[in-house]
Length: 340
Ligand code: ZN
Image (tube, rainbow, N blue to C red; front, side, top):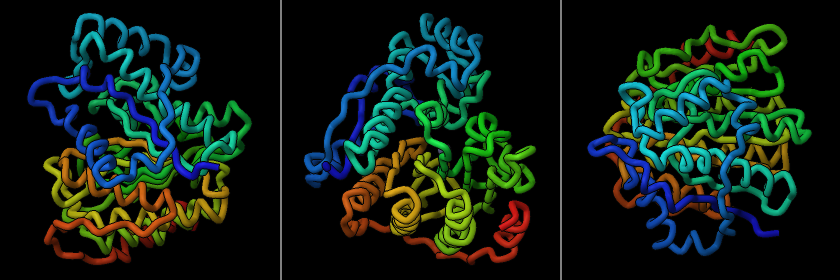
């Protein structure tokens, strides 16, 4: 079995807005770096497809879909942060559909794991609303499709610097889906408090680890090792999805958490190790945010080397940042809130 698949969509370049940070160069930097380092050639390329109306409507309202269709037809913005162009509807459908292709390949056992590098990102899109550069919630749509295909439990691990409010909204009352997020706080979009733990039978399956600005590597690593991984072990998922934003990186112009490429890679390693123990390594990693092209390129190549079962080459230009503290009191508070 080929070990790792790669799904991208070259048409993404037509989704842009001059001066906007969510720009084609982000994804171009990742793809070029994976090609330069010989990593793309070692993955199985899978073509994306467009998510169907039914697949989108498993997460979003018909009114939301109609709003995105109307806005894109005119090239209008959906909120001050979230632009569209006429090409954006098809590109956003393929950004979601790329994840569906990835999940289908992993569930059928055709590949062990997959990296999905597409845009626009998805984790801020709620059932009713596009926001934060996101039109459709790609990861939530993929999780719903996996559940519909018979998967009993899914885990979504979100290490973007922003809270994935849309993903939380979709699964806040669904005990089948574990959502774990590290994010800067207070920060956009304002959600992601420790007390947002899930409702009813889903209590404890929504895990927010709001980190103070300038957290650094020690706190970021501790959050995943002491909260994210134990939560994943308790959930025993059949499939792990990762909302992989690399905007917590110290070089990122929007993020504030001062995380290095090395720490991002170490967190990816512990998540993949846990996935090997609980679900035969069935992991689909999807690009979310990240706005520095060097950080995107090296975090992506480190991730891909781990997916291929290899030791990542270090970032040749590591960001000079303080490692910070392991945030014991904060992490103990989160563990208590979610019953770990
Ligand atoms: Zn982000």
